[in-house]
Image (cartoon, rainbow, N blue to C red; front, side):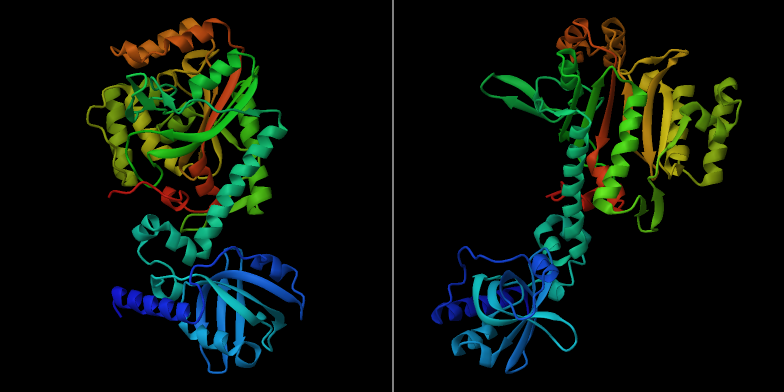
Length: 481
């Protein structure tokens, strides 16, 4: 039948139920979760359960149905001699997707199926839309994202993934609190974007008649708290960047930022090596994660590899990479791209710095599959970090890379206000109004040596649940209308 025919049929069933005294949209219903009923199954006991009808099999005097409440599935048995005549007759008016409550006796079938012999039932919500393919799930991936409620209703794996996401966030909070960190909230609506180089979403604050932006990072506010004496802080919340959408980027995303006074980059590495194994142990149940369609094994048993950015480049491009002329570097990069069948974007690349990072981004990072701290990056890329003591052209940072993607950066934070101003001026160029003068003023009050990190929570959930698309871990991802 066409969609509208199904709907008309269901409307007719709803009207018939009303005529028989069944209100199709019921009230509060006291019941026990199906997972609890399964776990504490007591043959012959009376139980009340509720959920959505996933399957219906009508077989004359004895009918069967499968109920799902999001925690588990359970079989219902509707017997003519166990139900009032009207209740048994009304069963034929139920459809897949309807939500019902049922009370009866727990029973195990000859095939060992735990079941409920229904003594009475009530409808709690009539579904007017036909479920997709008898609850086999939405085949169209884009429709899964647009109509997440149907995806969750029909896809056990998807629903469990989002339960895992919630547990990952909960356990992250518990871990950081156990290490003495305090959770804080800083403004999402800001007068100017700071803490990263990204295009913000712009809006207008009517009460102040002032242009505002949605934050691209909470970093500068969290550092103000370090200045103020809150020595160990973290924030879990949303950031917004008015940029592209792909398999690992969504304009609205969830981040965790952590700052520790009197710490440095190594303090942040210790947090990563403690937090991620904790999440594996408490949420996933293993530190060896199957990732992506290829079921690649990612091993999160610490210690994780540590390697300098320049060393990775020289491993691929030759020990003499930084001493040869730029023209020779360019030819070597083109040859390596052809050898690996990789497209390097070389138009407008005029410096060793730019060329090297294109090589790193396209040829090196994607091949770092196991957890790796890439350290000592060029200072031009990280203006908010402190220079390495032995080489001021590098900064004391790490990029934590897993599965070929950066999961999070970690810094020894810059706490010298004069050097910080120089770095921000260099980053801003002619747009000097982009410099946050209040943040510089905060640094001039004195910020202790500090370590900081920022984790993309969506990417973390992707890794720990084994999927490689960000839309699979965001309940309602942004989609074109």
